Image (cartoon, one colour):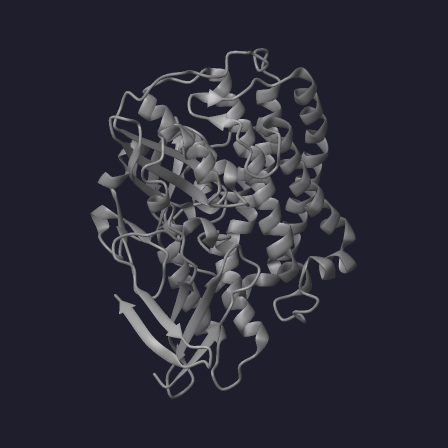
Length: 470
């Protein structure tokens, strides 16, 4: 291949990554790769630590979605203790997780994606941001800021702070909900629902202008994986369901705690991000997608009225393009605010019984929950002293790695011409990644022997020694 185009860094995502597009002599795209260039090693950091520290430690993986790691980690610790946590504690965990999903979706849609949708993929990059959007459509920008703020305020009211709250613990939550906090949260919900519905109306109006992008925005057949409870949409507990591109059930009722029986993990030399796959189909044919788009593909219905009505509209059409992650995110935001209101109106939600206590009773615990970007898996093993001997994480973004790479290649082949490179072409390639809303800080973890290159550079800039592994 005679030429290559490197997009470094990929912008408006969480974390650090780059895209390499390889061109042939004619300037046509031959290949493209999405590289995750940062490395995080939490699986190794936590070895030797007491298991009860894991939720707080694992929350530090990310500042955008720490609650998801709190939830999955605490569920793994519940398994290590072999306890059933109080029902109210489970409900309170669900509220905090949904608040985080809502605020994260607001960040993705309004801050990172809406500038492309409002101003156009070819707009001046200096204006194609939240501030430029606020000049053109201030009401839309205000709604985005308000929705993210609402989610973060709910987290703060429950856990004491917006980032890295320590409230979700092994066995439940650390303290019950007070009447004052409950009522304060409930006053926020109506305006949040209204703002989300306005965003949905706006998206459905403007989406008709992006037919070209929709056709090539990671628009191909894959499996979809998500959590369901009795077949219905679920974010906290349930079994995993896998459907194909036509909605046929490939597998149902899968125990998420036995994920390693049907999900394999591969690595590629060009990225620090693992590539999970569905084992029965092998690698890389076992490609699948998770997250908002996948969750709406696997569910039979949503159990809140407004979100379920929007879900039925969503499912009337065959929405395989990853462009529709944006639509699915807004539907999930609507669901989260509705569901929070339903849970907080339960008569026993202020119960003081919110935590179970126990010593370790099992050597392995697996916690699985739905995070903003998809299914999140924490798998721990401990010794007789309750110290971590092994930890494995499959982060939501990792599940989508194969699909993101294929999507980058598909988009590049249709929009990038090596003889006349324009910024808007490259922005469209980046936008495919933004559709998945990857959190690369969360997702880059060790698996096996990762490639490593170390250069020792003298003060004068001369490389005096090099070590390469892998």
